[in-house]
Every structure is written in structure tokens, then in C-alpha cells.
Amino acid sequence: MLGGVLGFVLIQHSIPVFISVIISTIIVSIIAILIHVTMLSKTKNANELSLIIMTIGISIFLRGVVAVVLDKDAHPLTPFFNFSSVSLFGITFSSQYIIVICAVIIFVGLFYFYMNKTLPGKIMQAVSMNPLASKIFGIDVNFQQLKAFAISGFVGSLAGIIIAPISFVQYDMGVMFGLKGFAACVVGGFGNNTGALVGGLIIGIAESLSSGYISSSYKDLIAFVIMIAVLFIKPSGLFSSEDVERV
Image (cartoon, rainbow, N blue to C red; front, top):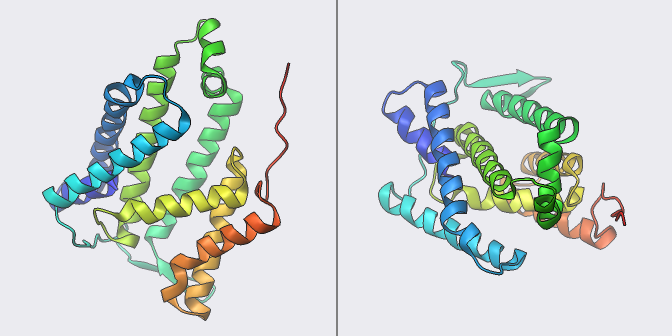
């Protein structure tokens, strides 16, 4: 949401799209780091549930700030390409989808390579699995957490600004995307990045088909219907694997 709103404001002030994307992603990355430094890292004896509740509260606060500073209206943003739509195999869609698809492919590839093929990526995974053991081995856990928040702020901001021409810019635009992202993780299987990607594709295609053949009114319902169906059939997700614990 912050990426979409900041990008919209910058573009409205005649700043080029590419520069607006860079500025908004940097600002949101800094905000993400500040949230970790000033709030999350200061919480004593915090468990996962308390941190989740805290981040939900922070998101509500940020939405309130944007609603007061900007407004609660939905603002349209023109696609980044000069041509507004593309026709392929008899299907017409916004040209902005090209940017979205390319960004997904690029970042999935980069994250796979970074997390699985590089030492810094494996260190980040180690910290996420066991911070105490990582600290014993001399890893700067706090720095790794800051880096994770910075990356998540960057990616979240970029996602917000490139999806804005499709979904409009609004103070609560991130709520439904967050819920659908959660549904995609459930469908694919938590802890499986490839599964989350496939789960997102399944939900996205199902939503598009339901809009065309049933009604666009039920589009947002489809994601949760699929999630509930998968939970009934395979609660661990379609692409989940058994956890392996090394002793």
C-alpha cells in the first residue's frame, strides 16, 4: 500500500515513473527498517503470535495515516507503457500485467538463487530457523533481521506500485492482496516458495475465469473458496513436504 501511494503521489508531481519507483522503494525499505528497530526488536519475550498482532496493529496505524494525509478515495494510475492494453489469443488485458509477470519471474529467480546458492542467503535461512544457534556461531542476527525487513519493504513497495495501475491506489489496497497472498501460501504449502507461486497462479487464473464465466462480483470470494477446499483435502498444502529435523 505504501509503495502504491508514494508512487502515485510522486508520479502525480510529474516525476518519471522509473525515478518514482526507486524513491518509493527506498522510502518504504527505510520505514520497514525503522519498524523493526523501534518496535519489533524492542519487544521483550515476544513470540510469533504477539509479533503478528503487533504488525497488524502497525498496518492499521499506517492505513489510518494514509487515509488522513491522502484521502479514502480510489485513485486511478495510468499503465507504465504507452499502450494501455494487449490482445493475445483473443484475450485482451492491461499492458501493466506484462510488467507484473516479468517482475514476478525476475524476483522469484533472484530469490531462489540468493537463498539457495549463495552464502549470505543460507545465513539468512539459518537465522530464520534458529536465531540462538546462529548467534552462537558468530552470525550478526540483528543485521540479518534488518536486511530481511529492508528486502521485504523493497519488494512490498515494488509490488504495490506496479499493481497500482490495475487495482487503483487506495489507503486499504494492501488488505485484500495480503489475504490473497496468505491464501496462496496455504494452497501451495507454507515454507515452500515454489508452492506459494503456483498457489498464486491457481488463485489468479481461477479468479479471472470466474469473472468471465460467472460474475466479477464473486472474484474476491474464489481465493478463499479454493483455500478452504485445499484445507479439507490436504491441510498441509498441495506442495508441502515433511519437515526434516537434524539431530
